[in-house]
Amino acid sequence: MKDINEIRKDFPILEKKIYNKPLVYLDNAATTQKPISVVQKIEDGYYNANANIHRGVHFLSQEATEAHEQARQKVADFLNANSSKEIIFTRGTTESINLVVSSYGEAFLKKGDEVIVSQMEHHANIVPWQMLRDKIGIVIKVIPLNSNQELDIEEYKKLITDKTKFVSISHVSNVLGTINPVKEIISIAHLNNIPVLVDGAQSVPHIKIDIKELDADFFVFSGHKIYGPTGIGVLYGKEKLLDNMPPYQGGGEMIANVSFEKTTYNELPYKFEAGTPDYIGSTALSTALEYIEKIGIDNIAHYEHELLSYATSELLKISGVKIFGNAKEKSSVLSFLIDGIHHYDMGLLLDKQGIAVRTGHHCAQPLMTYLGVEGTVRASFSFYNTKDEIDIFIKGVKRVVQMFQ
Ligand code: PLP
Image 1 (spheres, rainbow, N blue to C red):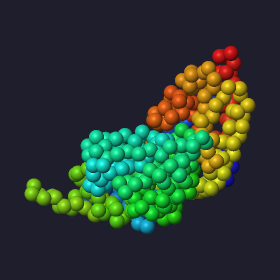
Image 2: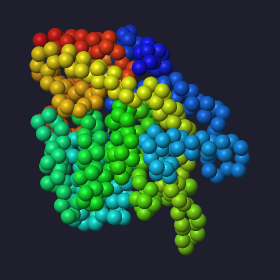
Image 3: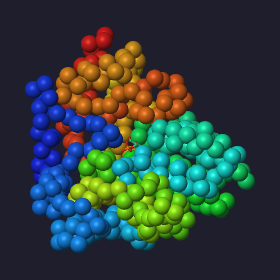
Image 4: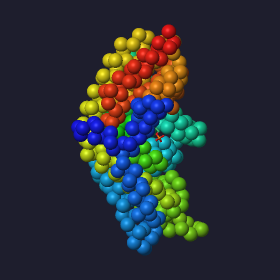
């Protein structure tokens, strides 16, 4: 991997002092920091390349349109999708899932049909399905976890019935770090002709995605979790499925022709992009993907795994510590509690030392209920973090433990 000191220079925020202490940013699963190239792309977009896209005959509009479409192609290439028509820009993972649930769900599911999710889902992959349940009466079934907090694949197989019409599953748990065997999950579903949505919010920043190899029907992620801007995300969908789905929102670019009697819809991908899209965000996301590719996703995975192993072994030396998420395949997320210390207190007292971690239920309350806790402390690592920062974090945790003794 490129020299870590050089990498850190690309992220000026990492130089920030918090309460006069160097910032140790370990909240990367919530959102990642942005490299200079991404911020410059946004700045340059507004200063030099800003015009509403698709509708203009003038130079600037055409240039902005081209940049937006090139960004779409970049995302398609990044995922190894067949065509840029399969890439819909959304506001993020949450909107992408809501789009599929509303459009596909309302068109193709009916009362009594079963949708399988898992015990470790983020609320973004639970609540939209519950809203559909309340509207049309689908049944939600839940894949349980084994003692290592991995999905129980045998139980998953047993959940599939003639009524199962959709599987919607996270690739990587934002709480446990568990990397789910999505390829296997998908192939089992496909044996039964069931489409699968993969929530890639926590996987794209850490794992190489080859959508053709995975064979996911839908794959969703957020720009801000992969070093891109907030407010932009992606829905990948197989062209045949997207083609048959009704639009999600109406207006703007999604139309072909409008009269008061009848409106016809645009072709893919525009059918799902009503209103002015975030064309500055899409181009900055493309720059973020280029940045990631330059460092190399395999290098990133390898380095982050070293950080995770080191942090895990150091944390386990502290008495009373309990780590949640012991999967064999795990990404760089470390959730824990320490006996007698509330997660919120740990988060606050680490913050006072300049260390940013996340505390609480992490938008996964059903998982918290299963784990029998109200919340956890979560440290999540990026390729710009260092072993020295892990040492500061561990020292910080020890200091909090001393305060409570
Ligand atoms: N799914 C998972 C697994 C996540 O970790 C998150 C965010 O933490 C989301 C979905 C929602 O992402 P966003 O808020 O960017 O839409």
